[in-house]
Amino acid sequence: MTRPDPARITAVVGNPRIGSRTLGAAASLAGTLAAHLDATDPTLVDLATLASALHVRPRSTDLDAALAAAAGADVLVVATPVHKASFTGLLKSFLDLYGPDGLAGVTAVPLVVSASAAHALVGEVHLRPVLVELGATVPTRTLSVLDADLVDLGPVVDRWWQRAERPLRRAVGASSRVEGLLEVAR
Image 1: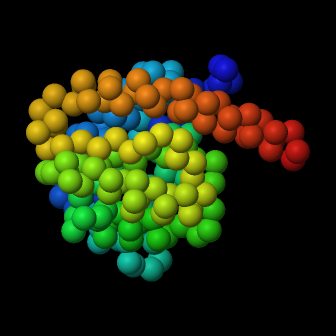
Image 2: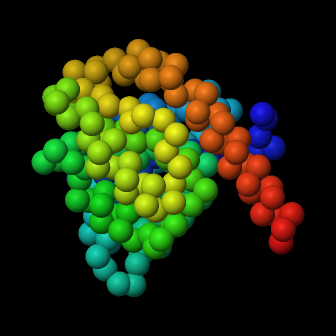
């Protein structure tokens, strides 16, 4: 199925360090997805730059823009390093700002960076349920990346893409059909 318009890809990175290696991995994955899905240039949201705004009222325009970019994405890469065998509190604080179904219509791709293969299921066990609870569709397995893989991420992403291509293309195509039906219904 061909989309009527280019897909919008956003990557949200929950590493508390500004400009982290997790950000680099997310940018790489988002760029690869943009190329494969004929999408516009990805939007990158480094939550480390917004950390001080997460618990302040009223919310900053930068934080509102980040929330809107994630909720408006066709494909949302949600990237985190492993922190205490789960995802970071920074990412959780950001996701907590959405209400029920705040990510409805979004196709999410979890990306987890860890030092140990023992944490390979963090994305599946901890992050996926939160994304699904927020209404996102998560049609692929988490891309789990070891620190050692960050030196040359291309082959890791290529292997993941071989399994993820079909379900991602179907999910992104389905979301464009749903949007079209919603427009007709209005």
